[in-house]
Image (tube, rainbow over all chains, first blue to last red; front, side):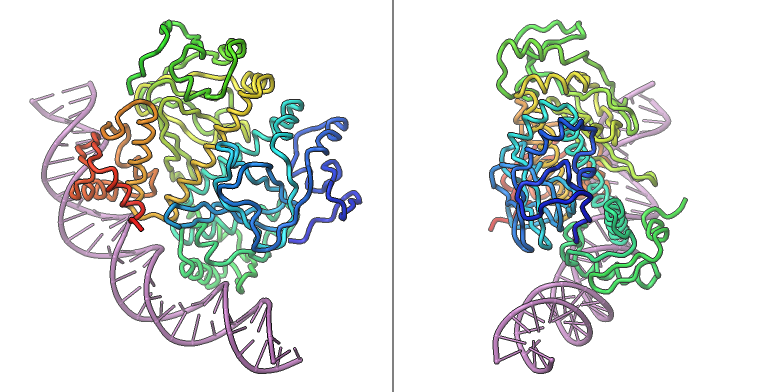
Length: 246
Length: 246
DNA sequence: CGCTATCTTGAGTAGCGTCAAGTCATGTGG
DNA sequence: CCACATGACTTGACGCTACTCAAGATAGCG
């Protein structure tokens, strides 16, 4: 996805980028920091890293070195079963924090791959730990982000465990829509960065079922879909698919 | 479940209990603490709290006050959909840490209920935050526990998204078995604390399907099931249900 | 000892998966 | 710039898994 316009001029060529002047600051670090604290936090982002479409940010088994904040682009995380079965565990866009699955055992437990050319801020975990001890607001923020990831996972479990195919896809579209809206993009019109196969994997469905659900929404005038371009025509109707009004 | 024998004598009548002399220490606080540090950590557990079977430890919407470590007993967590749909998000036993879903928004996002009379250690979150700043090993431990919860959730997503009914039940039984083993109980013979309905809710299945899967395992001599008593006869066979040998 | 919640089992069905054929985009090389 | 190849997507027909509905058995609790 195209980067949001930056508020302050940022030297794009430089690897080190100041968090204090980052347009994503409010997504990454919404807690209240004083100016002096912000200066220290600027030192947290070691470097930026480009990940081209199809490349991995990290793979399951890689040792934990850093957490990553997405600056631009779009990614997916996959968990793998021993027998080769793979499932998409999440889709990530700018402002999302990645890599927290590795803190527990020191190694990543999932693969994360760019679905389009992306850029991430690399935050060495040891520095993050130290800074979060020195700045309680940063500590709180880290805890919040991890906690929200847990809550997000609960939502996915609910989706996978108790929804029918069309309900799952409606929930997925509404979630995407809401996340785009928060980031200043249109909540009703966007391009999907993932294949039907990947959507299906995330939703616990086969790609044909995803395709049929899209067609059904199209027929009922809820969305306009042409391949990866989606326009939500009737957000209320989509919500009604989720929870039939009662 | 019956509490493990305590290594050091503990005044059961007292509300305050020293972590340093707790038999669950290795589950709760496996990081290396010095004796002087342990003393401070003892002050972390504000009080113990009894939760009788059927009572809630907390409900969705309750403000975050503390995290909880299970000392004895057995619990379930449920997430609720707006429309009333409910799903079991996890089963918890002694040594498990609960309540991390509330850190993100300051309020619990799930219900947690005792499935048998239980006892938990209450750790006020503000104290936990402060101590974890002072003791890096405690900070690391908190991060680890949260990260493991995220990884656990990934496992559940994989289960719900890509396994058939019998595979799900086999994975469930093997997971229970392993957790009992870690705690010093028999990995092959135990009593289920939850109903078929609750197992089904956790696994994304109806209770009848769970019952049929149990019967099928029984027929194939994999387990012996009589209501809530389970004996695993052929652990290898159960694993084979999961991932047909290849 | 009887009531109620829980569990098992059966029969029929709906929803999703599987397999297959065909259309449509994207991108690559001539 | 076009032709072709490849991957992505749609749609149909059919089958199987798990759900629904129902009846009966069993255990736990007062």
